[in-house]
Image (cartoon, rainbow, N blue to C red; front, side, top):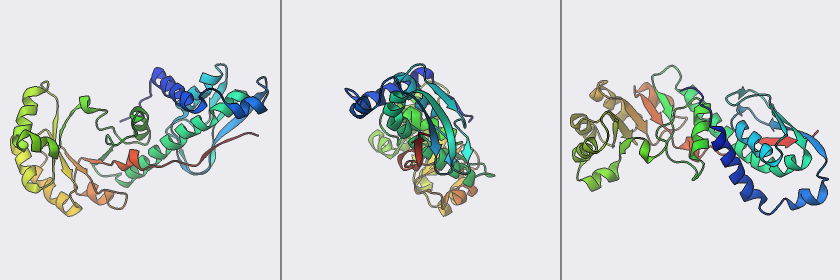
Amino acid sequence: MGLTALSPQLVEAFARAALAEDVGRGDLTTGATVDPATPGTASLVFRVPGVVCGLPVAAAVFRALDAPIRFTVLRPDGSHLAAAEPVARIEGSATAILTGERVALNFVARLSATATLTRRYVDAVRGTRAQILDTRKTTPGLRQLEKYAVRTGGGRNHRLGLDDGVLIKDNHIAFAGGLAEAIRRARLAVPPGMRIEVEVDTLDQLREALGAGADMILLDNMPVSRLREAVPIAAGRVPLEASGGIDLGNVRAAAEAGVDFISVGALTHSAGSLDVSLEVP
């Protein structure tokens, strides 16, 4: 999947919500120490290698504080930096630069970390058929941004939300009265053509899901040795997704087992933040 831009309206909404949280009734320190008429210039600088992500949101943060401010992108989202370097230059109101600094850095540091970690997984499986997917294990309220960061790193989005596809998990199966019954109910309830994916954790469940007409099967927490057994059982009849217990140490082996997709919750829940700073000359 190629890099898909966020809508300007969504970007502005995220920027304004974060500013409202951080600025509150006003930036006391900047207001007390800097003349509002003071012009300023600053650079957004990556201090470590990584994949750039979040610059549109950073630009929206500064423009929400000073509409005429100039935000010049030097290395756009998706750029892979091999060494530390500036990625954007900001020119305009010094007070806007200071007030927006932390919010802009928070967005860029966190989203770039997700994009960078995603790229590491994508690079690890390069040359295999497997594609890297994210999950719904996202920060509440920030899912659209975090899934954008996954796309920026070269991964693919799984489901944006519960209304975006059917994935029958173990608890659904328990409440529905069985795997085959859950699939039957889903087939009756969803529009024709909508893919029904089912989570299984044993090879017997895999066979049952195939027989019940699942369109895609998630192999949950199976070791690589079990994945190697599962692939010939499915024999290409439906796409297979491996999920759970997969990290950078074993993702290549999981991909070489022959699965079509590998979903990794860590992309959005454990990426951390990159070291990014705002530097004033």
